[in-house]
Image (cartoon, rainbow, N blue to C red):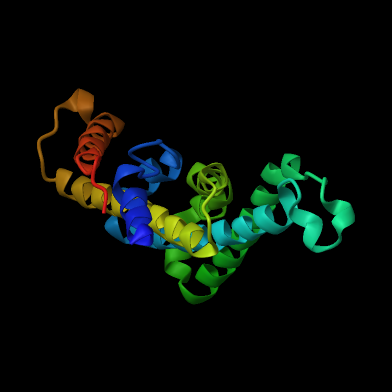
Length: 204
C-alpha cells in the first residue's frame, strides 16, 4: 500500500512539471505534436526508472556516511556524499547515451523529430531532480525508490502528452494574437497544474 501511495503522489501531487517546474525546456519545445511528446515522454520515463534505482544503490552502498563498511570496518567513518552530484550526473548521462543509441537504431524517425532534445535529457532537471528527491526523502527500500522513479516518469509523460494534445487542437481555435505560442502554453500549463493539485491531500 505504501508503494501505491508513493506512486500516486509522484504522478499527481508531486508531479515534476506541475509541482516543481522541472524539465520545462523540453516540455515546452517538444509538446507541439502528440507523436513527439509520446516518444520523449517514454524516453524520460525509461531514464528515470533506470537511473534513480542505480543512484539509490550508489547512495546506499558507496556515498553516504558509513556506506562502505560492507568492505571493511576501517571504512566505517568514510563519507563520500560530497560526490553525489558527480556520481548521479555520470549515471544519468550513461543511461541517456544508451537510450539515444536504442532510439536511433530502432526508431530513426522519432530520433530525427526529437533532435537535440534527446541527448539533452542528460541535463533534464527532472531526471537529476528525481535522484536528488530520492536522496532527500530517504526511501527505505530499492522498491520504493523504483516506484517513485516510475511514478515521476509517468507524471512527466502525462503532462507533456496532455499539453501536446491540447496544443494540436488549439490550431483550430481562434486564440488572441498576443497569447499565441508560449503565452497560451503557459496559461494551459498553469490550469493543468491546478487540476493536478486537486489530488493533494489524498492518502491511500
